[in-house]
Length: 572
Image 1 (cartoon, rainbow, N blue to C red):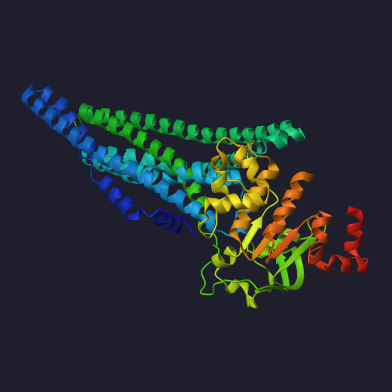
Image 2: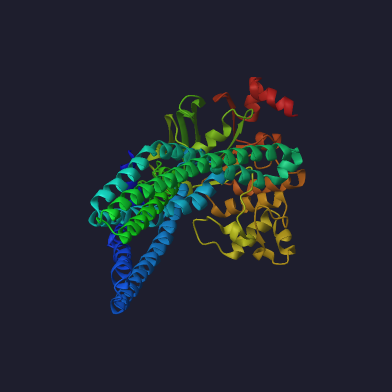
């Protein structure tokens, strides 16, 4: 897309296109005060005061005051509506961005750091919301319009002096174009560095305890210092270009003034001009200089806002998950992986020709070294990622044909790290369920998995407010909350990804008890390293380098005397 096409798309993106255009046109209305004020001033000084016509002076002053009132009313209405537009644009952009993140494919979100997404939805969205209601409205309707009016006025006053002024100013403006283009690249680089700085800062703060334990604070500080240094360098480049431009334009303005005074002086001496005319021209030259400088400054701001808008726009326009389908998945009876392949980058295959078929109920343990593809395999079941070859069949139907919401409603996923939201314990356990859950159901489940006594010992009980960082409940208890959530969801498919790897023996036993409760009459895919969990599986799949090397029960694989037996003996 070219720059003009991008701007048209961005204008429509916020949903305020018609309002923005209306207030653009409103601001284009001639400002009578801009071109009549200096003329009235000239009449007062050059005509009426010199001839002692004070009644005309008073009349002109009254007209001037009236025009100021009109001008003030116009600006007030315009600025008020423009402020409303900025608020609405900000709300629309942030809303679209957030919905896009929620609906985007995980593979696209993986390209962003958490801090970067936060910055895009806050600072960058705020900058983007200023692009049309603030920056472009300031440049095009106001400054360009007023420059146009000034040129028209001075042409009527004295076309020779007007041509000299116009030629000098605009020759300088266009000769400085390379400076503007250079500044655009500096602005873009500066924004990218600031976005990275925000991402890194967020990352380091969120992993504060880990950084302390690994004693890498100095390394983090050095990385942040380097980014701050780069930011400073780019800011200095930006300011240098701006100041060079301002100094050059000040010189041009001074040179133009000298030319006008010289030519005007000759004309005065020959009786062709008046002193008031020369003063008027000097005022208009100063006004031209001021407005062109404003345009340059606002164009740099516009570049920054435009870059922010494009970052958000490109994120929002990424391909979304296709959720809608007339085929609903109600009851999962069988799952089949048929020559399934998976690659994240289209080059390196993580999974290679995966084949197996299972029927409900069954407990499947996935084993193998880290990085062999176990998590990738289970992440394909809820369609977190798209397969790059083969097919996955559920109830003998390609699972791509199912409505995505109905597919995921049949799946519960308990991750290695507990997922805890900033809400009460009761709300955390009920969160994301497909049906209305009563408080009694929550209490009964917590009693079964050994969590009830701990919760009731808290001052607020089940109404205790928690989050992922709270120390009111332990890490193991947070994991049990996730199990309670999965039990209440009561889905046909359960995925457990290393859920006991960070637990001590006491909580491991509680999780095993919870697992037995939640796995009844289900498909369960368990990624685990604990021998007890693996041995009790109905089917063990050993994965190596993205391929299924062995598959069977514990006893069958021991008899094979292959990869699994070696792993088993090492763990014993």
